[in-house]
Amino acid sequence: MEGLFVVVDLCGTLTDTAHRQGLMEDGRVDQFHALAFFDPPNEAVCDAVNRLYCSGAYVEIWTGRTDDKREQTLAWLRRAVVRFDKLRMRPFGDFGSVEMLTAKWCRELHRLPDMAWDDRTRALDQWSDMGVQPVAVGLNEF
Image (spheres, rainbow, N blue to C red):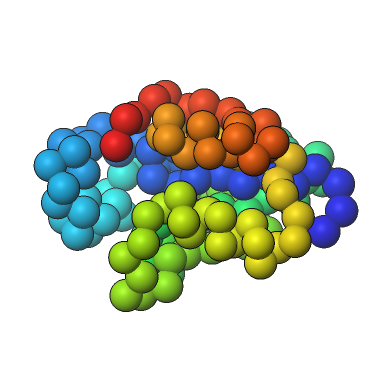
């Protein structure tokens, strides 16, 4: 992997989760994820990610969704016409925080991304603390 390395969050960043946001805020994570496949794309972000990809950036999509939802997630990405190099998903049965998962994936890569797009303030703060350029897409506090 050479050149610009970009990480993009899925739910709330590439997708518009407004119709189900209250479920996450109420702690109903399973229901939140069950409805994910009905999310409309966040067109502006999808277009920007596609432009980065087409310009030669290496794009990974990182999500807290569990990997048992891989096929549905890939189908959503195809419908939304999002171009990327790799999709990283939480292992089924992993209940750790997204922040722990992010740190684990960064350790495995032996390289930090150059920029990371996310909608959650905690994630953006984590990226910034690691020295990665955060790109805020809307802001959610959960």
